[in-house]
Length: 277
Image 1 (tube, rainbow, N blue to C red):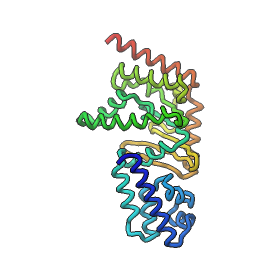
Image 2 (cartoon, rainbow, N blue to C red; image 1 turned 135 degrees about the vertical axis):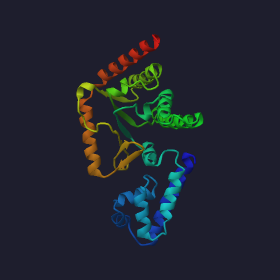
Image 3 (tube, one colour; image 1 turned 90 degrees about the horizontal axis):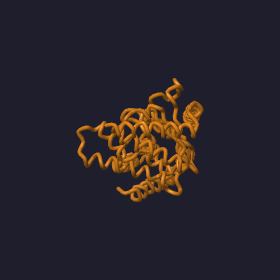
């Protein structure tokens, strides 16, 4: 399903939700309190600004006595989403965000990956996959990365652990090109990137990727990723705590200028290594 068709389907979901809620004589605030979200969230669901999670869709069905229609619609839309179910909501929100902040403890964030780097990541996780599957996955990642090339791109800030620079994903040539790409984005002032050095020692969110998103007309969210799993967090208290962790990482990281210098230095090391092999 194309992005435009998928958005139209979510708009149908929202319109149907509004129709059935109003037929039941229930306000957005009342429905929200019964399904454990705010009334504002119900309004965002109805406008297709934000998509409900599965447990919320189920509670809406129970409250409005709709015989599972919203769960079925949700499953249909998520099934046709090109991304894994645990990442689908985060991917949808990525396109709506006005600001995105990534913390990457081990690999370059998807929005900054080159095709060659992404290919090496997918091959490492799927050594028996067909070339077609790998190229489809790489294509999806590059489609996401185009977000940072748009004139209306969100403000993007990434903090990379130094390990991201040092782990030779795909070999020296791939790493040299990947780090040069990040450095170029930095020099062109399209993104902000800091490096958390090994010397920083212990730090918040060790070993877990984290993304914070802000929106024009919706509350911020946090997303944490594990092994074939992800958690989209929108509870204000949890998001506030996650933002505090990110601020601590930002404070411990090298400055933008020092980070750029380190990225360029490590890229040069990979180039020299490539030239001697």
